[in-house]
Image (cartoon, rainbow, N blue to C red; front, top):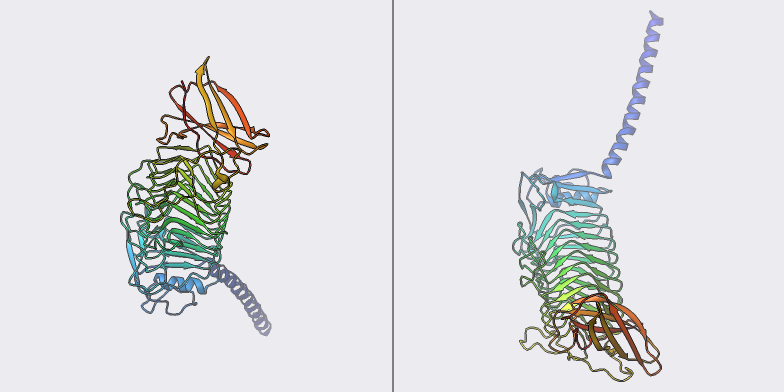
Length: 522
């Protein structure tokens, strides 16, 4: 019996050892699981209230009333290290959350995902609405590596969204500055979205319209990339229209303002109906920006619909590229280069038409290459190199820039100024014979220099007698002799009878001339 009792005690002891070991293993596993949870918790907002969290940092999103609000969820996500998710399950369907005081900034990576709300079907149905707030903005992200998705952000007393410091954020599928249907303005009183000292962000598939901003404040608009905002992608947004992309909501400032912000890409956006310019790129630091494949001043269906911005694109800085855009229907020029240095920019491969002033106006800078564009049906010149800032006769805006008309050539082109006031070529003859269109062109400019001659055909001649440039036909390079003269004859197997031909000259430094006098092909 004693032996058995001893054996039983030994067995019991071994069993307790085994249990203790298993408990230790379980605790270790539990700690590991808790660590994983700490780096990826999900807090689900269940209330439209605005109360804060009862005990921030305890891992539970719960107000004193045991509900989870957007404020409480942000507080818990900030307190818990790692990338967390804020989801929504407020009954079902559209819900509006009234925000009565500034929300805490997102200081630890988080995804705030309105697409999780039951009833979501492609458009946001969770609205964050400011209620008489002082200057604080709607959502502020300083953490980096965060996402704001599927929300309506409206009626705040300052900016709708701010990305400050950090980087690598995504802002997508939101309505910023409109009602929950995306059909009417519900303005944020600042800009829609501001990025400052933050890089590598992706801003896509948003509707950003109806924001008030300040037309007199250059840092104001639908989207503002301010100092230190570099390498950002802004793609496929509607900026200034309604959700259908065809009706006017506008932003009171610019559609997109870029100040001292380098190397950003703007692609595939509709930027129309804004009170300021569609784009305003300015400041010595705003270099290397690419504006490509956007609709600027027109609807998403490629029609005008009275959706023009002030100017299409304003460049007040250097080394930017405007390429492959449709720029039409704007109240001033399609592309406007003035103030600052505005040098060494490229305007290439765009359609620039039906703007109320010039197609491209160069009021400042040199080395600006303007080539391969379809420029036609603008009220004034296709390309204007001008040192005169005109006043709009209607008095609507002191910034309306009328230019000075055709700039005469001068012998050997010694003058300086806008794009070096590059001389334009002259078409000596243009005719069709033997299945070929034959064109003879001469150029007088700086002696012993090389120039690219761009050829264009148009259905009509501009009222000035110089331009248009409706159909780009290609380019070739010529060299002037010691007297500053060059000549070239070209023949193409295309029947251009009834079309008007024009040409431009571009120096190797990149300065493009105005358009030549037009010549009818007979």
